[in-house]
Length: 339
Image: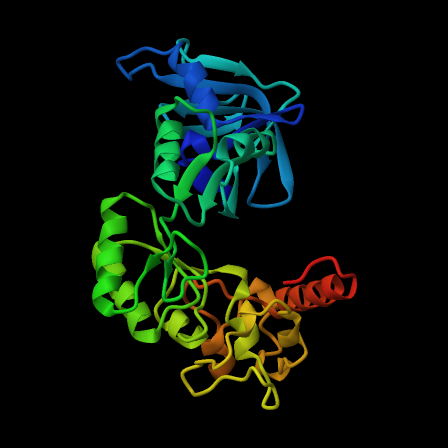
């Protein structure tokens, strides 16, 4: 991970100063006022900084991080890295430099109020899980440097069936509607699609195919009528909240058990106010006993075959399942929240 950051955009780096990060956006604004326009001398350098390496639990003291334009070109000891005389220098002595953090599931309902909080905690990238034109415009203001904030990747309106769970969703009840909605969101320049709970299998399949043709990533829930297996087979980029996993793990006596071999559910239990009911009917023997080894993840496919998930679905480990299960039970027992 640390090696990859050597070629990462500067927007992915945060300089932590007494709890306040100098993010890529803020740094770029500061640097642009001091740089040349020809691009040949567009260098900047953090000098004498402590680098928090992400390839192992270590820190590298007294480093130079050299940047050209918006790319990190070199990291090394201060006595070994040549800093061009025209470079914009930042005195990093007593400070720490680390890759910016990414919050991969946010809802920016009050984005401009949230942005200072993200930056103050070193979060330089956020993935907004639903939005409209105003979110796209906000993303572009950050990109242009007219608004200081984290890099924003945003979905468009939720893609849902009837009735939609949330107002403002793009509703698709047929394959033709699905293709039309996907094209509209691509044309509107959203970064990815978010599928939601009331989609039917044929409509979900049409979304996946249209998204593939238009090179649009698909993320979101595992719709109950679609089922976890189909979602994993579709190589959906991420599955939020572990939706679908608890449903798939229901034992033979569960009233929420799958209806057929395609993992379709009569009762979308995760939409119920008391989702903890799912926890009471788990068949944990379906999880391979060694799937936590080396941090590997499990999915429906490897639960059947004993293998390891080979694609980027948001699979959970036994450890994560245990934590989630106990969190649901504890919250319900304490009457803290109804999930």
